[in-house]
Image: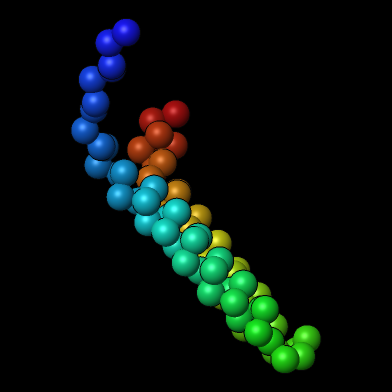
Length: 72
């Protein structure tokens, strides 16, 4: 069987990778902050970081799919 030809990455491929990297890095840091918290009140910064991570990754995904949304 013949391999399919590889296509070059699209102009928004870096946005998808940035979203994945943001989720991985921010999620790992938030997990470590939560795991090493000494009391329940000190987990608030970890939750804030996780919320910011999700929001930033969401902006990357929205930007990556903007052309699709505008041509609907």
